[in-house]
Length: 340
Image (cartoon, rainbow, N blue to C red; front, top):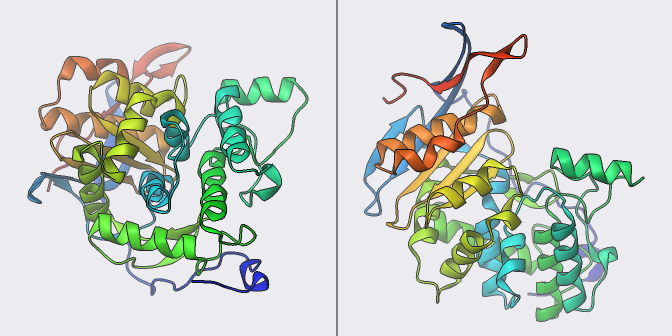
């Protein structure tokens, strides 16, 4: 498929939008306590699917469409491999990352570009400061401002431009929904989730964003986690598990989770998304309705425990305590009865 260059320079735009609908039937998933009193409640939905497609754990409305945000990146990385991307595993993990913006992440994105004769001038992602708190502070102390390389999606964008070079597709306009790259990405996500996109929008970094259900996303992550390493899906999963520090960064819960549980695949997404795949093909998808990032991990850990994942390996992933006067006075915990 080819397009005139002037078509390629049109900014990415929604192909279609979901009709106005009633909000999903979310349920309480996480409680915030202070000296025994439940101070706040985070609502949401979740599902854990067995490899055979049966439901192991469920809460809320996991079949409602939502935007998976950055949890789509491993699926997008599968599409890039299909299109001929061939880079070291460490850089493939970065391709699926929402990285913290450490030097290793920035250098990795630059390396992907250099391997394909490109510079950061080819990137069309938004500019930003490093996502990690420590990394952002160091970056600012050095007198730097927002850049595309520092932005947490730069690895994905570098690999997207690389695939355009490999296939002779226009680099200019690679984010347009009808660019052959994005058509391949859409079709790959449809294949892995087993469902058509309910809507299409634009993600924060500028990439076309496809709406799918938690059910579909859990199915996709189960497939990735159980795939043979010789497959495209298996290559992405293996790279992420081998280099979890490239997928997020030091001090990030996604990196810690993959280190804590051998064979586990994990990726977060803005607006309260957490996806997990287990090597037996089980997939877990969590959505916090208010987008609260702090609520992702307490309920994810609880779901993993219900699935029989070793409880001791998850102890280090408990959320920071609720403080009063600098001392612990409460906690974030999974709601006592969140299952339907």
